Image (cartoon, rainbow, N blue to C red; front, side, top):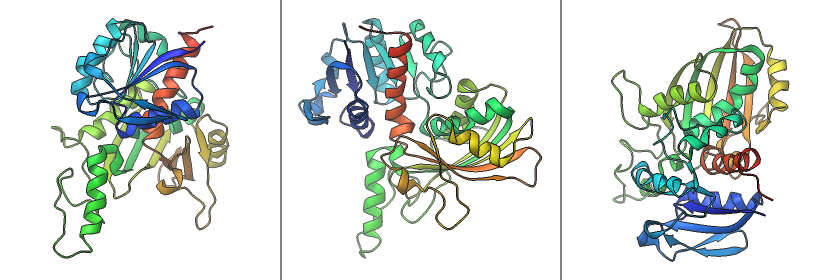
Length: 340
């Protein structure tokens, strides 16, 4: 016996990935609904070997549906998530709307699966920010072994994290730079993204950090441990899919780099590719379409006691969004919504 699943925002990049991953992982689905705005009504999208036609979110009745995977912006989520929750459908939300609500679990299943048990307070579970999701997967097993004191992380985030318009802008700008008179001015980004990097994601805050950097701090504390001190610099790079992170981790106890490598190799959701030779590491292009969070360049930081460096790469549309949401649904099913 399976579940009745609704995918909200099914025509977007993340919504389509949710449908792909539900099919790939053979999630037990008895019935599935692909929901979108009225302007996308009837759009055909794939679900495994089936073709679905989108239904109108505004008119949809969530009564009798088990789980709704939301992949729409915060403004629309604010309207429709409470409606679904009130009808008894558990919402797994990919927006930032509920991440910092004390009554809403913020979950990465490899890190804090037990947190899903708190879903009943609002019938909503939050999916973390894409850059946070892969980071905490890497930090969790190391934290369990040697207790993390402080993290310094620099991110190299692909344009797909900013949506389809951002992907189109990188593509069009890249082409336009080779054709005189067809240059494309920045619209989605504050500066040219083609052949450039931009140290600015989301809005600036009073202390000089950006909202994206603040999210990584707040979410890591909520998911993993409020005692961890974290500072981040988040950078947008001209890559279509795949976020990368350079991570410096200070521990309370000594942790040898070889032991850290062994721990990570045995940890869920992680693939270690770490050879000290040309090409012995993973780049964003190589992680696209994969489920794993890849770890490379594990090494001792000789400038600070009990400190390691590592390189972390993951498909942001998968682990950073759609995959994590489906994993939450799987965890919810195992722990709380068992059927059959």
